[in-house]
Image (tube, rainbow, N blue to C red; front, side, top):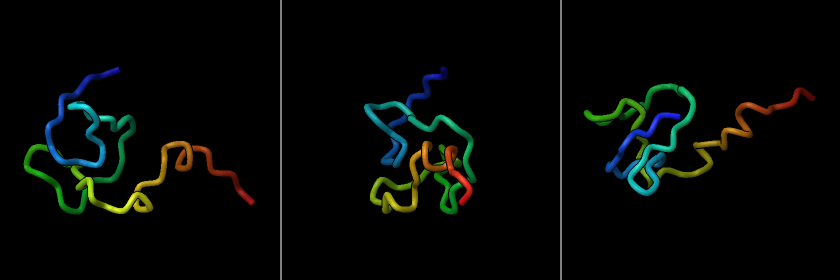
Length: 59
């Protein structure tokens, strides 16, 4: 596991660390210090949990 320090007001920041664990599409509004930056005040519905993203079942 990689520990990445983060002090940005980002959705993936938690206790000064980046919690992003999988590569995702680049942010539409990247921060100069982070191409995955997503503001914390973004709606959680825009960010499905990793379980939801990787464990989808076909109906």
